[in-house]
Image (cartoon, rainbow, N blue to C red; front, side, top):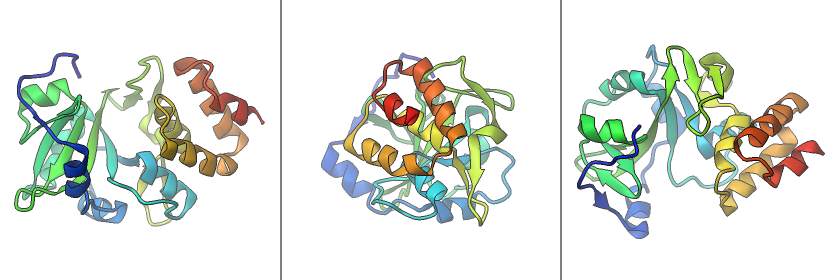
Length: 212
């Protein structure tokens, strides 16, 4: 992703966004469509924490998945009847071309008939089979190390990485997610999250709770 966004792009207000995400898919719907793909992928963000804990803890306004950027075409090809829009800095580029995709990180799947957004794809930096953290490129892990799986095989981003991303600009729902996940994190997961927070967000207030 580059810092230079292409011209154009629509700005959607909060009410319109909420309405157009009202029919967002759940993890099971995405997993069914992506069965058998070679590209590693996983449910990310708040839904990932709920898959880790084994049940839905709160409403979710959308659904995000993470894939290596080079694997996005394989994901896109599983949804030929839909359109992918690129998203960045509060703007949406409909039916994104190569320029918008190169300049952005997020891609929203849209139903062209209804205009509804169904899920969000994070196109993540990587080097071959190694995931690279977009917040700190020195944090690199093999894909097998960043994903867990539910009992029925749905891959999700491990909670310590979900919480690392939620730590940057903590919203009330992020704090709720941290407080709910913390009792479920064993010592090894707490230590990893503490290490990464010290590296990426030194002095973060969650560090004190993780040390307890």
